Image 1: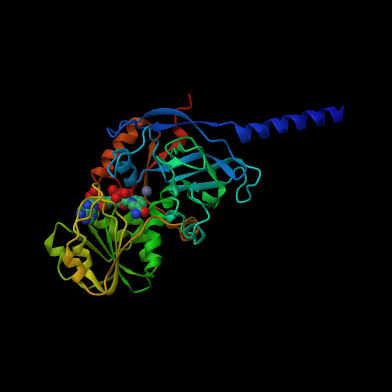
Image 2: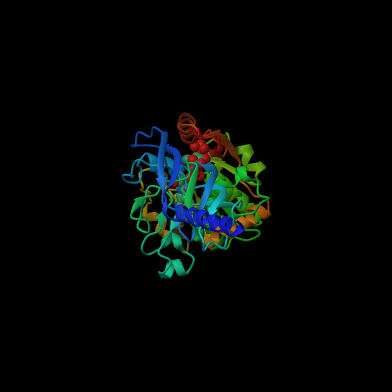
Length: 377
Ligand code: NDP
Ligand code: ZN
């Protein structure tokens, strides 16, 4: 009798494994079909859980300004239907047979990338974001490693990803506030470390939104003296609360006085057209301006005069590699550094309203969608 039961269990287990490895995974999310940007509930499927993959039940997804740009095709025509979202955190609910980093029940995060070639010099140097064959971004991109299907992001109830592109999240993390670390966190952490910002440095943070308020927290934690630049009076107190020494409303000429030649490092997260020369002039000799903001028309109007400032560097920075993302996340949680978030329901109209508020500068500082509230029907 026991033998029969044992045989039955083996058969059942093999059937389950076959399901886990071959069947596509049903998913529910919110998509837009055109640059008009109207969200609607959307049923789709994800590729099956491969041997090195994990299946994550998404708990929270952040709304990054890049999502707005992608939805509205601001940087070239996007692929539709699009399920945005590259700030993702959730719980592992299935693992492929080779997975060693995660077990069922663990928290896991996913950022802007879900794959890369793994073989080029950049991938080998932990810079998957500049993979020479092109990284596979989390949504809206063809995935050559999965029949060229178009990736679908985190405004959804689940995601399948290789464990190599998933970030471990400690059990004690304040999980509601983790998702924005996966993009806003690493995008600002990375250039601060690349430029070796240290105690006593004078740091400028231009654009005090989702990314900017993370930059302020990291720079303050590194012991820098931080100045925030934004276009509103509404955030002056918030800057002080997060530890900034000075707040500059760039629309107020008085605020801008006496700043030239005074910064070791400035990060610009500005998402709208602006003149970077203003910030180049503010750098000390040897200072760095890291540009991470991507203005909507994809062009930066930089005057040739900017290149007459000797020994100042202006460089591009783009998210961060997986190893660096893990380091940022571990550091942030160990040091209680989190984004300030406003939680919204998983609802198409709420997401559209949130987009309007991001554009109007009303959000403080990141909207996060509670994906557990998605209509399961
Ligand atoms: P947010 O909208 O949250 O924040 C942008 C902030 O910039 C807002 O506070 C806004 O003011 C402020 N701002 C607008 N114009 C100016 C100006 N002329 N001078 C100073 N401040 C200004 O956006 P995010 O932080 O989510 O993203 C910022 C940018 O970074 C986007 O372009 C996004 O696409 C890009 N990005 C780039 C990444 C990379 O790897 N390079 C990764 C992720 C994002 P107000 O609040 O009043 O509107
Ligand atoms: Zn982002």
